[in-house]
Length: 84
Figure 1: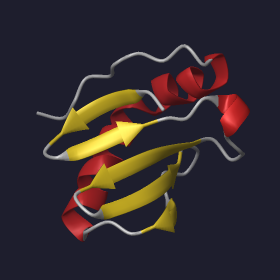
Figure 2: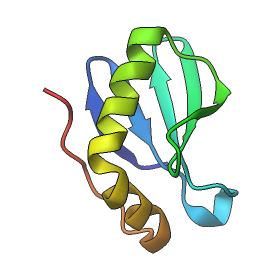
Figure 3: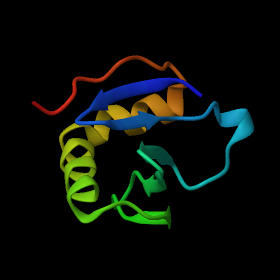
Figure 4: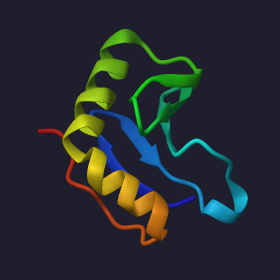
């Protein structure tokens, strides 16, 4: 599962599509917390994150949403700029 970004202790990954399932989504890990965020509406659809982590992950995903959807569709994984 390629790691596409890491910031403030938050790790963002995306699985290869042949091992994955719809809808388009990201995997987010923060300490012992793990969650799945849907790319279309940026809602957490599985797992839990602390509120501040969830807000930061959503803010980052909003900035890069089009790029992330294209990455899911093309399977051309690359690093994405973190929040600063």
